[in-house]
Length: 286
Length: 84
Image 1 (cartoon, rainbow over the protein chains, first blue to last red):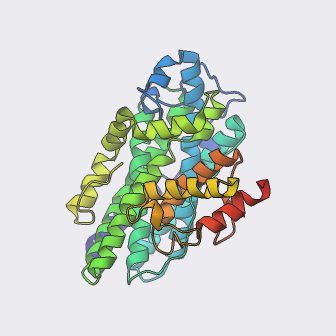
Image 2: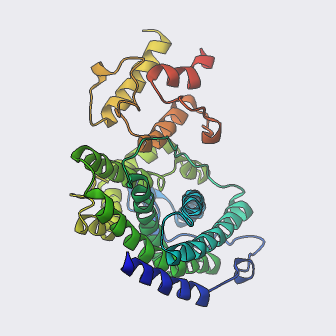
Image 3: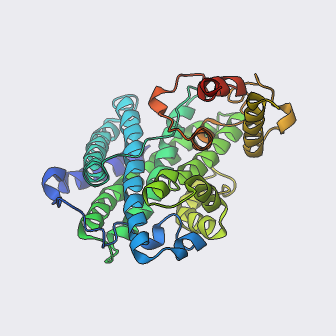
């Protein structure tokens, strides 16, 4: 826990240094130029499939725009859950440095949501609805806190790979590139904190869990990673982009070797972290 | 086969295909699929997309009542019964 306290102190200082105002950071054009890429083509969920290759570039850019709206919607829903969970954990049982950093974490996540929400509502006139359902469960000691932060790591690791890629992609329209770059700059701190607290909680509690609990936790995290990926394949996106048979496209993308390889590649660092720390025993089937 | 029977059979097949713990014959209409962990809560999102495709209607998760995904019976009642 001492190392976590040190990290939290350093990250709080870094957050203070980078304090920003999302309301003045971005310039929002009245209309987006859809002749420009709003999402990196190689990150589009159908990229590399026969369907994607059959589209002309105008259709691919239209699909890219709706993929951007979906990606930012995923972020909104993920960060909503994150904010709820972080707020619940303020001043609970942590050393004061950790609650101090949780305040920055909350502040930054709230700012991100305003940016994503503005993009989605202004240009897509909607946020794609959340399909995840939270079901009450009984937990062993420490399991709920551990799962919360482990899920934060999974969600943010995947999102950050996309942000990092798109924040440096010169093909992207300036606004889309800037949003991704901005998010990546904050997420790198959140990830450092998330990894450390996840590792700490697992070490502290897993020694007291029985085999059944450990198996349940591992199964849940593997399923959660697979479910998180499914959000990136949204039939609503395909419909809005004017593609036929949206649900069939969703199902075929999930089993496409090209798409599966993409998911494995993007998830590799995240999975490595979980395996290295004994949290997962093997890579989940994505 | 009645329409209701057919839909319930499709739902069972969908669930059995994704379950790590059971086959289609062991899923009854009133089997508690979440409580018995036949499918997990994180698979509900996938089930919702499947239901949206079957019914051609969007599911508003905020309006879904607790217990709707308990069993084949509850799913059928919530999403198909009105359609006859």
